[in-house]
Image (cartoon, rainbow, N blue to C red; front, top):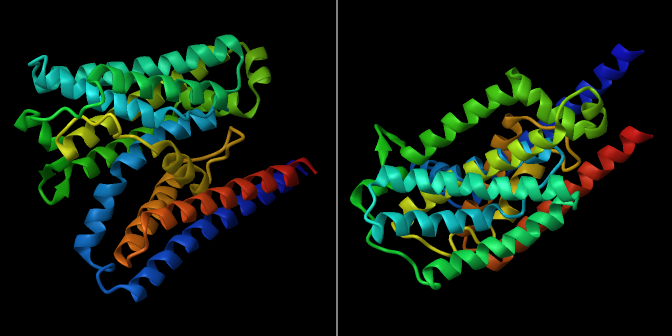
Length: 321
């Protein structure tokens, strides 16, 4: 009986994953017919560059979602890291490497704040990270007085604008991070701990694991990866922007949920992120090419997010029956 039930679950998961891939293929086919500019190698390279930050930050969100949380502050972390890293390099006259380390430590620390606040108080992660989203965003504007930071060192450009042979550096960083976290989640004990806490935190605690530390680690990793996204963003636009990450949390969350990461915790793979990010990236790129306004693009993304969450909730309800 147990084996039959597991086989049925596996079949359902395969069908669900296949459906998402078919949606991706359908989007590519539609835009290829609508615009001759879409199905070109140069455009696909552009898409990969555009989705690199989204994919990197989505990996962090995935770890948090799998462990049973959610982080709505990722966009604000991107903004704060963008500003502080740029200020360290420009006003502080620090070497590029030192400024980047400061940005990475800052993002990790903000993730630590999220994790400690949520685990120690027991507040809902959505409310807690919504609060820190506003706090971090406000601090980002305060430290730079609302002004962008320009004149970054030339060496800074490589992370967002450079190439390693024919491959854009942001794409290379994205692939490395995807591979590392695919290994962590699929092949290590800490990866299994994330899944265990997200599936049933109380049972995991009774097994002797410190669930609070695991959840805090998840938020720290999300902050660290958001910081990487903020650094690449800063390099791409060659300036520190207090609005660099505005709205990013919704794109990240949409990519995760559309790809198949459960908002209820305990489910999801890195390969799901790849498909979800590609869907969001190709959709944005294709709609822009055919002349659809940014406002209608936001409507489309909102509808996709609502549909994906509704489908996830429906699947969860069916499992309980």
